[in-house]
Length: 258
Image 1 (cartoon, rainbow, N blue to C red):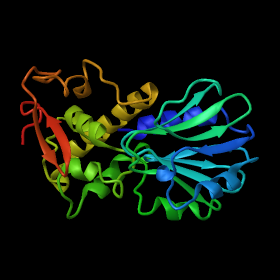
Image 2 (cartoon, rainbow, N blue to C red):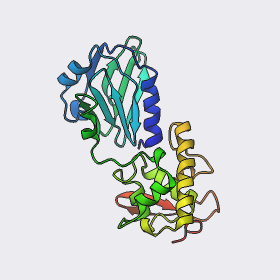
Image 3 (cartoon, rainbow, N blue to C red):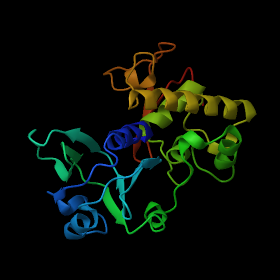
């Protein structure tokens, strides 16, 4: 599932082709369009050029000389660059044809998708109630966001209206790095735990952005969580897991006691 690091990688793909004229827009499956028709998307973008794109949490925001394309990649979306003559697979839904190749939006499950705002002023209405980007959150701001009548820590971290960009893998990895049980109440953390959580969040995000994904490294929780009988990479204890708000949550009972 694309999280903040993946979307940052998609932004970099688009950045490499900023300023190139959009020769055509092909919509192969309008099921990924949200609030815009294929005809309107083509008419709004053909002949325009993508300008400097930015990311907000899991959203990619791409101005195109007036109109703004906003993409949420859901569970299975991606954006990649290809030669025009490279065969497309059946999950490619939208293609922006540029001079020397194509930007392809691929999405198997089509849970979210592509929006179009008329201009930069209209773009925030598409984003809705989105919290601050996880990379921009200071330690003190994190303490504010987690305070008050919040739910469990894992659920709160993954709530996009609280902090934008953290998904299932990142939230579990951050809690594991900070040695804090993800089932604890978000507002129960003391000052030292908040510092440890913020430090873990910064380190995990920086390493993941550099890798372009949440890397399944042997020294990370992500490198062990999907094993048939997963054990903690740090202490060797058997990992625990349960469903929390519909998400599989993984932690180490020894390193992250309740």
